[in-house]
Image (cartoon, rainbow, N blue to C red; front, top):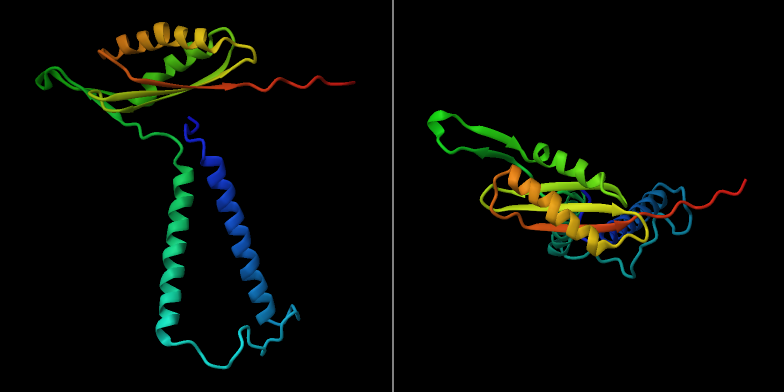
Length: 190
């Protein structure tokens, strides 16, 4: 399922821009130090003066660089995690008689098919997260342009979600529905 977090696109753009700037700076420094670029002399200092900075300044610079690098890696990893965590539900009334395990993705597959078959719906994607005690259903629906989203939402909640809630034997199923409007296909000129 796609992320319900709107700033994700901005995050990826900022990560890409930061990465490109750092790659360019590193490439420039490497090319200059190897003598491939002659914009700066290899033996010319970058800052005025011949004094080396204090040793503690070098250590602080390394620590700051490592911390920033780890933060950027964490930020990058967060962009990959786009779906809420799902788990296998363990359903049991009487453990002595047996245990039923249900993968959350398998539980919502028929629901997704049902919603995708609704009129004016191009595709549907759903994620069931949480535990049987505190479940959450996240649904992304791609609808045709001009669709009455209020009526479609009502249809999804009263029919699809109600049927899923009954199938899973849940008293309530908090649901978040994200609508996307499909782009109209451009007319082809032959």
